Amino acid sequence: MQSEHGVDPELDHYTCIIDCLGRAGHFHDVELLMEQMPHKDDPVVWEVVLSCCRVHGIVSLAQRAAQELFRLDPENPTPYVLLANIYSSLGRWDDVRAIRELMSDKQIVKDPGYSWTEQKEQDTSLFVG
View 1 (cartoon, rainbow, N blue to C red):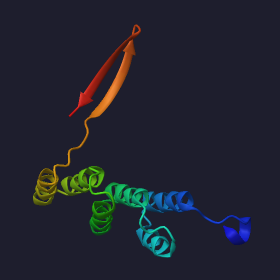
View 2 (spheres, rainbow, N blue to C red; view 1 turned 135 degrees about the vertical axis):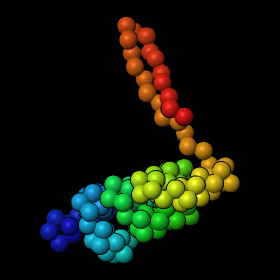
View 3 (cartoon, rainbow, N blue to C red; view 1 turned 90 degrees about the vertical axis):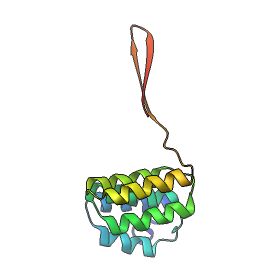
């Protein structure tokens, strides 16, 4: 970017490229870019990697991303839930149980999902918990 456009890439640029590469299944390129980029300890980057691993069922990199997120943002339930979802999609029920137990031991709770609808000027909220 610098040589062609005179712009130094920032964290958002790296995050977008990592997301595109991961969604396309190019995990080797994701890992190469992450080794070269200056922003190695950003939780958003690791969440993007973990989310892409969930789509493609890439367990080894997902575990690495989750471990980084456990270290960087230990109270965040997202990596626990995403990793458990990866395990469950692969039928790895013992691993799902281990993640749920880890969440329980650390008292990490996933916030319920909410939806709102409006019918005849009356709001209705629904949640899944």
